Amino acid sequence: MIFCIADLLPAADCAAVIEAAETAGFVDGRQTAGWHARQIKDNQQLAPAEPRAPALRARIAAALGHHELFSLVVRPKALMPVMISRYQPGMAYGAHVDDAIMGGLRSDVSFTIFLADPESYDGGELVIDTALGEQPFKLPIGAGVVYPSGALHRVAPVTRGTRLAAVGWAQSLVRDAARREILFDLDQARRSLFQAQGKTTEFDLVSKSVANLLRLWADT
Image 1 (cartoon, rainbow, N blue to C red):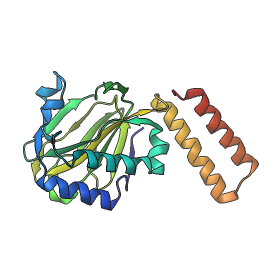
Image 2 (image 1 turned 90 degrees about the vertical axis):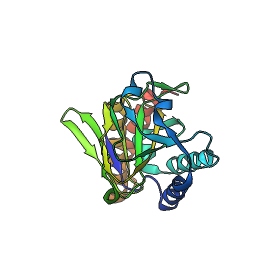
Image 3 (image 1 turned 180 degrees about the horizontal axis):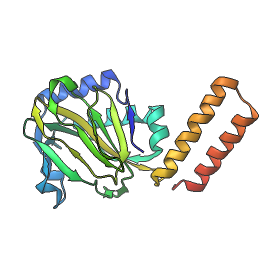
Image 4 (image 1 turned 45 degrees about the vertical axis):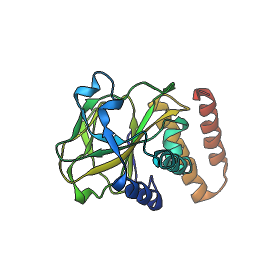
C-alpha cells in the first residue's frame, strides 16, 4: 500500500529541520550505500558528526510516534534512525530496493517526508514502481509518502534548486503489506461507523475482527 499523508511532519518540526539544514554539514550519500547502490546513488546526507543530528532525528521520530494516521498505516514496532537527504542540480538516485535489514531491524515500510517547496526545485520526484507502472510523487513541505520497503523506487534527477527530504524505515508489527492494508481498511470502517451511529453491534463486531486479526498477524 502506498499512502500519502499531508501533514506527516508538523510545521514547527519542518522549520527546525530546514533551518538546521541551511548551515549543517552534509556528506556524500554513497557513504551509507551498499556496494551495488554506490553506482546509482548521488546525493548528500546530513553528516553523522553534525551536533544537531541526534536531536533532529529524535524530533522527527517523536512526531511520527504521535501521528495517528501514520500509526494506523504502518503499525510500527520500531523505527530506524531517519536520514536527512539533499539533492542539488544533477543529483539523482537510481532504481533500488531498500536493504531488508538495517541496524538489526527488518525494514517493512519506507517513508519520505518532503522538506522543500515543490516550486523551488525541478525534478526530484520520488518514483515508485507499481503494478500500474511508475508513479511519481512530489509533495508540499511536511507531506510524506509511505510505501513498502520492497518496492523498486528512485529519485528523479534534480535540474534546478535543492530537494530536501527526511527518509526513514520502520519494522512493522504486521510484516505483510496486504495484511496491513486489510487492518487499515477495517479500522477506517469502524471509525466511520462510530462517527455515524455511535457504539453499535456492527461497530463491536468490526472492532472484534480488527483486534483478532491483529492478534493473529502481529509479529511481537
